[in-house]
Length: 168
Image (tube, rainbow, N blue to C red; front, side):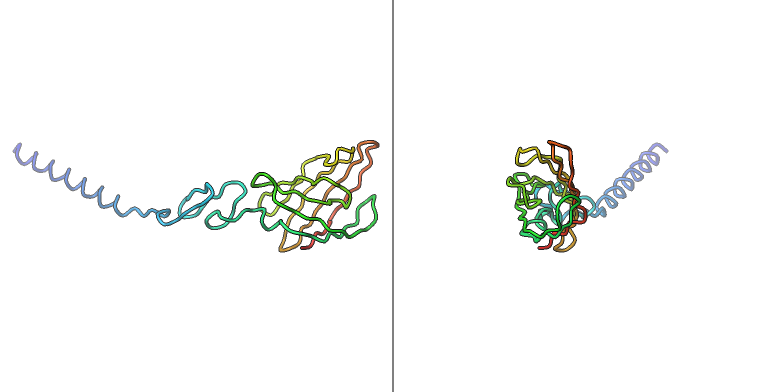
């Protein structure tokens, strides 16, 4: 009787072990052949990219589509309708860009950050002359639609530039 119990227990243990090994070997690793660059990580076969990168393998800098020279057409609340040119170049960190000739008046570049298709300008005084700027916009194709405000620190007056169109 003991012999049958030991044999039965051994047989059940063997079946359990084989079953566990069989099901474990059937588990598919969705990330086995996926390579995520620039610090990206694979989750369920798809790369999750770190801040500043996008694409199926995290090789594209988000800011790339923003870089270039744009013709600006805008009608602001306190200044005349105007058309001028700005340039956007890469900044020092992966999410940063520098905008030259913003508002057709700033001499120093305006610092902006990129997150996906959005460009954001935190409140700053680029030229140190009392005029500050802040705003945001989105890019669609080769057009950035910006909304920003320039404030004169000496008297508090503002120039609101809404739906400023920047075309590459």
